Amino acid sequence: MSHETFPVDVSAWIGAYPFREVPHPDADVLVRVLQREGIAQAWVGSLPSAWHRDPAPSNTWLYAQLAPHADLLRPSPTVRPDWPGWEQLLDEAVARGAPSVRVYPMQLGIGATSPVMAALASACAHRGLVLQLTVRFEDLRQRHPMDGAADLTAAHIRAVVRSESRLQVIVSGAGRDLIEETHWSLTPSEQVRCFWDWAWVWGPPEDHLEHLFRTVGAARFVFGGFWPMRLIQGPLATISLSSALLPGVTTTSAGEISGRARIVVR
Amino acid sequence: MPPRHLIDPHAHFHWSGSRHDFARYNASRLRAGDAIGIEMHVASILGSWGRNSPTYFASPDDVVAGNDAMYAIADDVPTRVRSFVHVNPNHTEHALREIARGVARGAIGVKLSASRRADDPLVDPIAAEAGKRGMPVLHHIWQHRQREWGMQEASDAIELVRLARRHPGTNFILAHIGGGGDWAHTINVVRDVPNVFPDTSGSGVDRGMLDAYLAALGPQRLLWASDLTICTGLAKLQALEVIGMPQDDLDDVCWRNAVRIFPPLSLGLTT
Image (cartoon, rainbow over all chains, first blue to last red; front, side, top):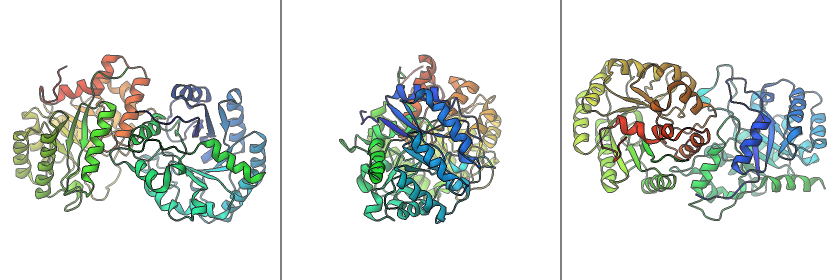
């Protein structure tokens, strides 16, 4: 069961999850997990910030937690584009060397076509930042009664991709249906700016990942482990079993996506 | 260190009456199973999987056709596949006849999906028959069912435990702790019910789930399994290895517990 190796995990978080105990969601533990799995680097967000009214304090905490591991863990701070001063968070992200920022429109109650999302898309593209979206943290069927946010919709994703032609987008936690609905609702020039991790995509025997590699293309995918919510072994197992069906297929690296975002700025 | 053997006690196959790409699906299961070391798939087919009657309310005709298709697959690959006999407890006499027919065709367990609430008296004769024959009952479970869900009469651990307590001589496999709903709710419900064995299958790979079950139930109450996703089965297998379980404990979860609860020698292994 050999498979390609992944230098970067784009879908990691640290910090407590508000609705259940998640074991030791700490930066030093993440470092050990990455080393165990042979992954050189992770883009890391603040997990609790998805539910905070103002993400700025969480971002400050995130930078401090990641600082001792700066060569391995790169910050991916949270932005709330309907909160005063959000542009300053983007400037700080750039100053701190962040490759991306994360936004959680469902947790914030921001609609698919809200102008604040378009403004965020433009501001990210202008600064060479990748924009990351998260479909879900847990399965809908197990959520806490207070966790009322629905899964991210294809309408949100295509609206943000369409709104800014220079923007690079990574979507974490989508399944086959959402990926197909979104991908085939975009033009070819839009499709190539939208990337997906496969942490929630099924492998054998349904073989959804293999199907997606054949149809939307493996180049649309980037590795994301979804730690600490889910076992990082999940997406590694899925691709190891799927690669047997499509030998030689390679996904896109996080570095390439980040590079494309920065090229736009230069 | 990997387990010395690997048995999947919660597997499914398809047939021409359930989906057009059934051959691809079945081949994929066997190929992926070989890749991760599954020596035996103990599997069922749930009627027509919704094509002619609902998956979880399969008609008697679909039950028979699905079981026949399952037995044919087991006949084709006898070294790697064993069968459950799937029944719909709303048709009691048919279900009991189907169990007898299934045993004659080599079935080694009874599969109940979500056709009738687990604690309903209609399920009693089936549980009793399975116990009499020394076969476990694999019961589809919604972890912490808080309301009715469409196209099924799902049960949760509380309802299965009511049935299990009425039939202490029958072993029950509580399906897919990773298969939807709140797995944390199930733990305390089944903790002191020794004839209920949760299986790890389902697409969910939440961190902390396996650790919590092992801490609460111990390795002799948990069954490694895959259900619809061998990929997440592999992830959970690797996670069990990473958490440093002693070899004996890992063997319990991955095959020895299955050998204990299925009929003697039916899986080709002894404890």
